[in-house]
Image (cartoon, rainbow, N blue to C red; front, side, top):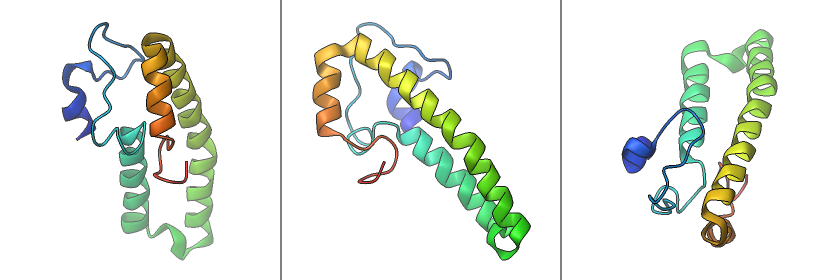
Length: 109
């Protein structure tokens, strides 16, 4: 859904496309980084369903270790992305971040 909304503006490298404007429609009206939320939901969902991660100590440990390694990387990416967006969109970004406070998880984070 996020990829569809962004269209050709979506890239895996941090980049903005000058003059295209800040996307603030749903799902970006709910969280600032909905694609990261979608990725986390898919990954953790697959772990729970296919690996039955929480049925053993080793499964739970694997999930904990993955979380401990990927979440700081994801958070760093989010901070870098937001820094870039703030430079590009200035006041529009400030208004948007006041309106949409959640970065990844609605009402929490």
